[in-house]
Image 1: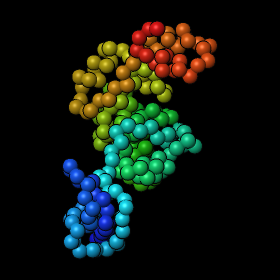
Image 2: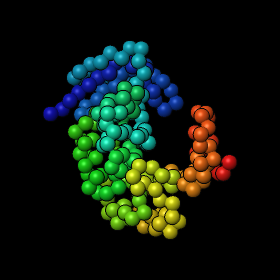
Image 3: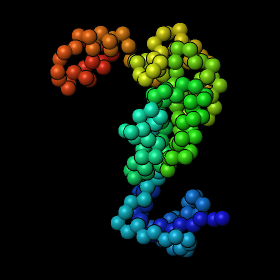
Image 4: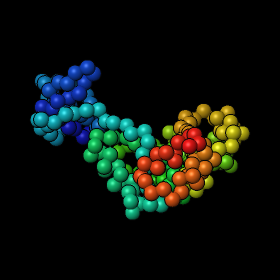
Length: 207
């Protein structure tokens, strides 16, 4: 069954210009843009509104599973849609962290049930899950935390890092820090009550 939509009188953001015009959509696909197109299906008058391509947010930290009292895949995706974000890529530092094929499948199932926009997920690297990283399918990439994150999401051994980069063809995103430096900076700043200390403690050099 075809679903049809016509958006009228929108300020459409096109390459190099903004044009007041109409847009015709069938089954979620734009089939025509122009002031003289025939109106089909549901008609939305977008007078005074901008119509822009959907935004892709490549790094979100939705809190499901594990802390969905803060935000879950439904509330997070609704907020994304309200801001014009039609696709998001979610990080693996949940509780439990998404570091196995099983946990990835569970998270995808939650998203299929709850998300109102398109989604993709990173799988997290650990010191001992190389086989999982190589075997998992349909992920947007591998996330490496070189500074400690949730659970066992810390990879700071150079040999393990090399083995992850040397095996497989997946995109790799790196949270590049030095855990030993971070810990020493935090030790030096312990007891200092100043919000500015946070950014200093996260520097990748000793203070």
